[in-house]
Length: 349
View 1 (cartoon, one colour):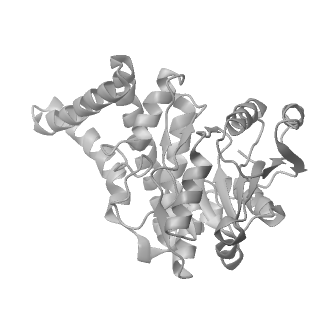
View 2 (cartoon, rainbow, N blue to C red):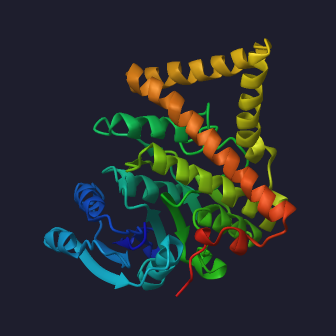
């Protein structure tokens, strides 16, 4: 998702605070339509502007933007493709605000979102925050299953779902905010993708900035991906996590290796079960049964529960072996990240 929106919200309260929401978009005009429609329903009363920056798309969204110019104050920009991180940086440089809110283009924004962010920053200011994601009833069964897998405490510890108990919170760029000051001091996002958001967060920590979760600032994340695309996504997550561990060993955690251990352990347990040792296989069976039960209960649908078992396996398998492949190339073969995985790096303009 390259290209993006910027929504700058003007208000005289809170020391002339301006919010700018930044959203990369690449070949997804249908998402822009849903995003803009959700923003027209915002109950935030202050004026705001929207800047849409398209990152080299062949399927442009300019015509969609034109439809909303009578409802929203929108400016449209087109730039050469240089990745979502660089597109967000481009937007922050163009924005009029001194606080930026960043969304992925496949997000739908609840009507109270802007008010919640404004309220939280008034009560307890922070230079960078992240918000959770949720699923709408209208989402497909696969989208709901993937949402469960990405947000449940049984899979990710609930980090994307609103749990900030696991160490220092690392905002994700599908729903995060950053002050203009923090952007200027850090230089914004790097050219790695995915992984540009934890990379930025760690650099902010090194500069002395704080990050936190704003649980009430959630979005509806409408991931338009199938099983194959989901596998490719989480596989890249695994590769980039090892790269980030190499860049920032101070922030390396044992939990980052869990998906690899989980996947290798599952394969070993299945091999042992053939030899008559089924104890570990039963443990895995209990875990996947819990996934089924919790997802079915949360989504009120046993079909989604079954699919969640599959998406959880895909998540652990894809991430785990991505991490393992990255370990082999970077740690053992001593290749640079850019040489080992050139597809993970964009050329910055």
